[in-house]
View: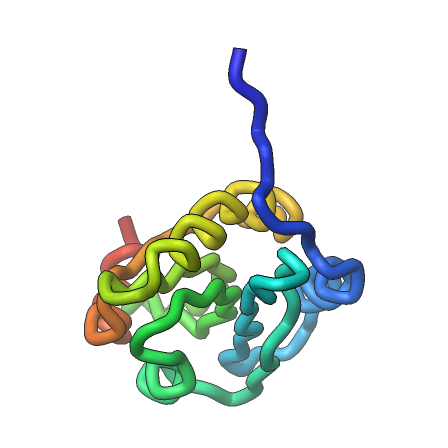
Length: 140
């Protein structure tokens, strides 16, 4: 019987930040970018960004290192309805170091569980992260 084993611990401060972020009342796009500290084997908040569109978010991410993001996004449904879905995105560039990819991949499920999110996506190249891509994922 397999068990869910997390490679990295989650910083308690990050857990609090994720909880507050989930229940925020703001109607702007916002993101939390999370990073793994290899030596401490700890996931922590690298940056929290407000009023950030998808293009700016893509620019904020490193091209050759994995990152976790939680993104609250203003979604216009085209019929007058607007929602603010929150999604978890795992950015894992193909040319990242294998050790780092494994640390991130091995910690993803536990972090998703702590963040209590159901919209979970993965990108292998930063160019994939576009507003159109996000719309297509969220409107399925």
